[in-house]
Image: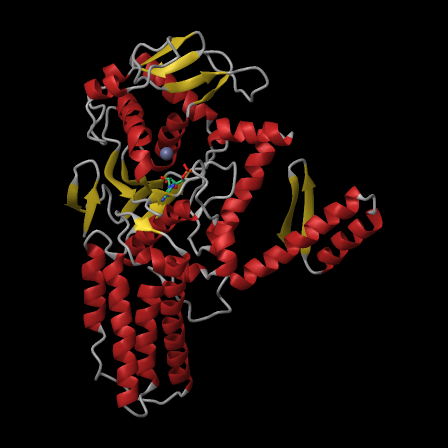
Length: 468
Ligand code: AMP
Ligand code: ZN
């Protein structure tokens, strides 16, 4: 199996450190708002990569961090007169809900920055003791000059970078490229105690601390969008290798941008659709099919027309699944060997082994649908065994790897998500009743939900529920 490694600028054989184990870290969201479908592209492509590794028999530990403290979060909290943790809790929940709706497998761990202050401080202390970090009255910086390999991931040369670096207002830095590890607290900002005084961590150090805590000093795959190569991932390497002296990541994997009219979809440009608004109009499977149909490493120009044609493609697959289910229901006994299923598995694995070539994998799946349909038309009374094999192929490839089909709609979590939305609607109505001092109605909603086995729990950050 080959994977393109940004660090080496070439495809390499995939050889994890301790097979069959694979450690996999992806940079996750900053939870100050809903995420857009550009972010979703990176999350889905990481999900498909992980699913294919599982298909290949690897035992994958998958970690995605949640940045729950940062400038944007503090700004939003101030605008809304809320605490930063209320904002973070709201959008963490929204993130997890949207991830589930997009049929993205849950990570094994979603570490949060605010829950890793100990690890972050001790990593900075280690860098300080190795003279790679310096403290200027409560702000701690990484001394880029002390790390020889700086620039090796992005291919940037530090001299060029210095010339290009913006003239920094912050004159306490030794070098304009030096970046913040620990930020001294400003008035009225959330802060944590440390040996340098109260403050909070920089964004880059969070990922170094959380990835090594959950996956060890050397990770097999570290992924993220192209925009993270520099400076985020470059800085992660400097921090982690600077502290451990060991190679940080074996394979760096980067996802191309989702663009709109050839411009990167981003919050700051305002040219975005949130995943939740797109999910109101289109199936998660159509979004996944559309993303599968272009290679993860290149750009993808998004439009709703493209999504509509993916929806049509998906319909072909859904009709096919129905045909297979009907054939299975026919229950005709007997063996069947007149259709060669193995060639399709071989083709699928061959292309996926070549740096996760999902566009070719999707094409093979459509060939399979066409060929099996033709076989059904040309042969009467095919036994259930034939349909069973067709079903297994689709389940393993289109289902378990690409995540675009499900044979059992009752297992499909779209029903669960409707249930979830209805419960959340009732929670909001109960809150409105409380706001109107209509406690009788509020209690009635709580009690009736309880009789259905749904228990509400109120806390400072809002109401959550549990099924009993
Ligand atoms: P952020 O919350 O902005 O840090 O982004 C979360 C993830 O989405 C990161 O891996 C980013 O690289 C990725 N990302 C952001 N914008 C895009 C885009 N337009 N296309 C693809 N991935 C993106
Ligand atoms: Zn990161």
